[in-house]
Length: 183
Image 1 (spheres, rainbow, N blue to C red):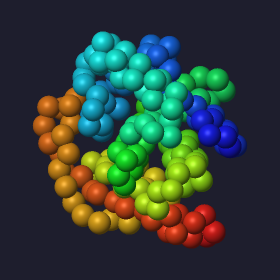
Image 2: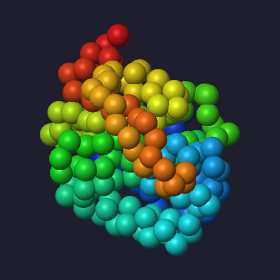
Image 3: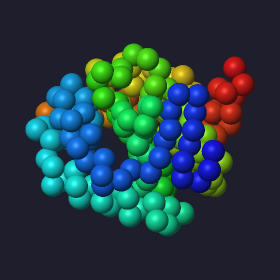
Image 4: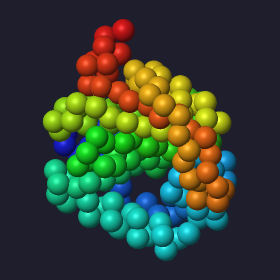
């Protein structure tokens, strides 16, 4: 594992790049993916995607001071999803998505575990937060596997749906993650 590239048993997590736009548009253009996210419209807006990926690529140039970092997940040199770390100047929040055809194979658990390990290894943060819509049990299971604990229930806005949705707010302390790794 190095500062900006993570290799797991099956995946490579690397900084997002503007040239990933077409792959993002294809996978995030799927309503079943977009409806579970807060910041993705449906239909997918190419200009917003271009701007977002451009900013994400620039953020990696000096990642130590960036407030948001986006890893893209590659399987056999093909992008299949993403993991973001936001609010890095506070208690970071992790978010993630995976192209629908890659669901149910454990890729997201592998990717999220690797990114959290990277965060705790490369920064002084002692905790991380996340939220998942209540109707997204797969995302909640990923959090549970990592050791996140439920700390409340909130509403989050879904841009793709144009409404707010009930969500579960979770928290993971560095020591809880280490404990989860030992089990």
